[in-house]
Length: 218
Image 1 (spheres, rainbow, N blue to C red):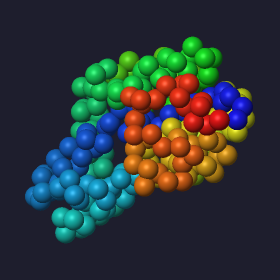
Image 2: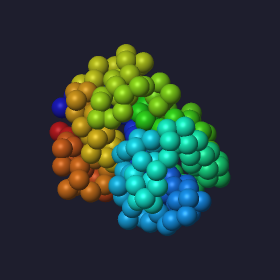
Image 3: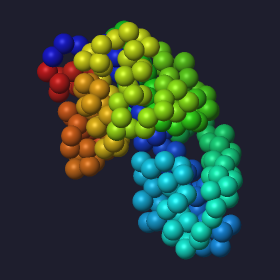
Image 4: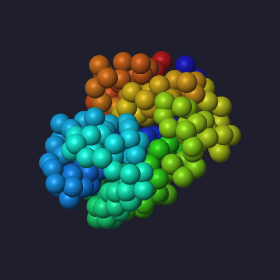
């Protein structure tokens, strides 16, 4: 294959793991509402929007709220989540990520972040990675969630790189689907069973070098 010109990274589960902070905030909300929202319950929230997540939490607790009350609860949950992520630092970058991104820079491959999170920039600032990306496309710039390819296509468009010259790193099925729909190469980070539609799957970045990736894609 021809060498790719741009690498687009999802944020949560690929560069950092902020899922634990989402859970802490939802768990805290459940406690305030008088019930225990467990880690098993939390599995149902993966890849789901904030308001739909709240609906699931209320369903678990057997609680009904008006649309106005739901808005207030979702805002409160997000504020707690932001409070948690403000405590993050560079130690929370997942193993091998930084050295891999540095390899891309040395090879003159452009880098982008493509995340649905509206807090993506805050997280990158906390862990010291903002300047490692040529472009950042987050939930404040896109209106359609993955598996819609909007977030990845916008990143490619901003750097004027054709989609077929882009490679996407994702840990979620919806993200892999979005990358495939965008006409990009997709690399799954995580479980091969869950990410079977990706072009390649690796457990993480610890074992991954740019040379190894290029050889696997050849």
